[in-house]
Image 1: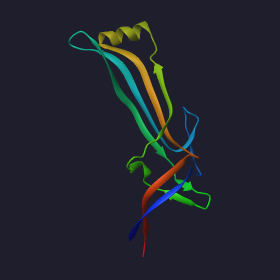
Image 2: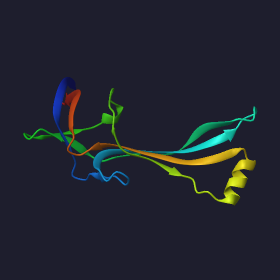
Image 3: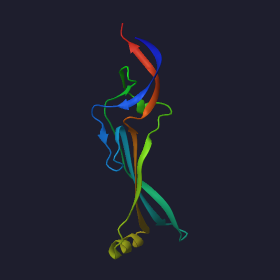
Image 4: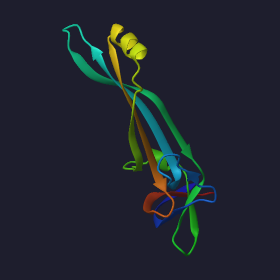
Length: 138
């Protein structure tokens, strides 16, 4: 195999795009994270803010760049240096307030604040330039 370095620009497309649940966007790569935010009681008697990752998942469908003269399928983009997704949605859902839940949390030294959900996406139709390798089999 002989690798050749290439630069390709075009619009992101897919035959089977992902419909984002929170933002309503359509994309080819979607990353979702959810973090539980809470206050915890420390040894000094103070409350300090902390968080714990509850969910981290990524979906990707086969996708291509289209420059109106043809399509080039892209593989392995998530591992590329400088690759960043667009934030499609970022919401904070407050924890429900009940007396029983609040009392139990307090006795455990915790105060639940809520869940922060972030949806990042590579939207279809967005312009992108990729620098990569093409391999030819001889």
